[in-house]
Each structure stands twice: as C-alpha cells, then as structure tokens.
Length: 238
Ligand code: ADP
Ligand code: MG
Image (cartoon, rainbow, N blue to C red; front, side):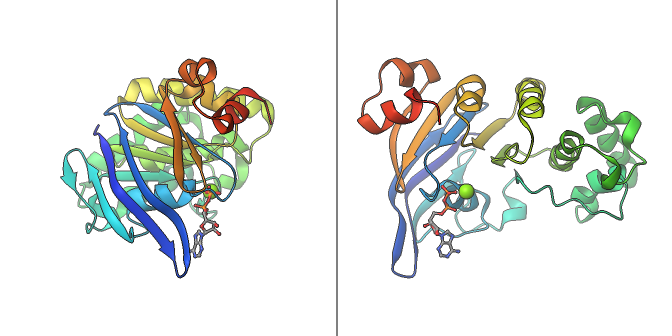
C-alpha cells in the first residue's frame, strides 16, 4: 500500500511531446481510474509509474520515496495488461509462481503465496491446468494472480478487461472491487469503459492530450464537470 505521486512529469518521444507537464497524486489505498481518448497518454503514464519508461523530466514518487531512477523490479509495483501474457506450456500454478521465480522468496513461501492467490481468485480447482484449458476470465485471473503473489504496493492495470465479452466484464468488475478490498492495495486502472470507471473508482482522472482535465470522485465529475470535455466524456456513453 502506498501513495503514488507524479511531479512535473513530462514525456517526449523524439519531437512528439506526449505528456507536457503533469502533476498527480494517487492516494494510498485508492482505486484510481484513468480515462481519456485513445492516444492521450494513459499507457505512457502507467509505464512511467512502473519504470518501463523514463520521464523526460520530473519525478515519480511511491510511498514517499523518489523512484524515478529505480528499476521496475525495485519499485514494489505490478502491472496487469490486457493481453494476458501467460505461458501456454506451464500450469496455472507455475504461471502464478512465475512472478516469484526471480525473487529470493523460499520455495515454501512461494507455495503458500500461490495457494493464497488461488484462494482469493477462486482458482484452486484449476492449478494443474494449462492456460489453453481456461476461459478468458480465468486466464485474466491467473494474470492477476501473478501480480498478487509479489505483494506489490501498487497495482497498475492497463485495460485489463477489454478483451472479454460484456457478461464476463461485469463479473470481473465485481471481482476487481472485491480484490481491492481484500488486498488493501493502491490500484491505478486504465479503461475505456465508463461503467467500469464509474463503478470501480474512488477517484477518476480524466486525461486529454497528455494533460489532466479533472480529478474527482465519480459523482463529482458527473454532477460538476469543469470542462466541456469532461462533461462529454463522463456524461455520454460511448
Ligand atoms: P493511450 O494509452 O492513452 O491510448 P499511449 O500512452 O499509448 O496512449 O500513447 C500516447 C501517444 O504516445 C500516442 O500518440 C502514441 O503514438 C505515442 N507513443 C507511445 N509510445 C511511444 C513510443 N514508444 N514511441 C513513440 N511514440 C509513442
Ligand atoms: Mg493505452
């Protein structure tokens, strides 16, 4: 569990400035949802927080520590992508355990953590299966399990449900909310789906062209949008 702060963060790829100058505080233990049109810089922001991408300027702080120059594995962060990136030849248990392979965790502790993750994610009966024998929702849970076992301070989700059908998305939404409760972790969650944003978020961050348009609780944005853009984005379903 940890607060995440971005201080005067900018990011350019060559001549293209994707994020001009951004300040954001993600409260400790919050479920913060990032929304905004395609290409506005959401994934880039997550990658900067995780350390997969360096900011051109500015600082990233996690739990009060400045981690701008810290490598990804030392940040206490875990990222869940929309493509599950599971190993097809490994079992569910091996896939979940994979997140711990390179750490110095003892075999006994690893086994206990895999079992705990399986319990939280209702995967206990599937531990010996291969990813090819699972449904989309189950595969997504395995990917989340791989994050959980590392006991990160912060979870980053980049449109994790966008490959799932509508019914499964609804189910996974409920499960993610429960996961947030049971882990007591800080979560930063990127989505295109307004229903997801409105139901999951404590705090919604609306981005547009690399800038933050407004930050607030879901109903706050809905009732009191400060710009036309926010009104259009939160107000109208798309
Ligand atoms: P979003 O996730 O909101 O759809 P991205 O963060 O993926 O947006 O991308 C923001 C902008 O940055 C886009 O214009 C994209 O083309 C550009 N971009 C992202 N990554 C790179 C990269 N590695 N090199 C060059 N341009 C990039
Ligand atoms: Mg993206």
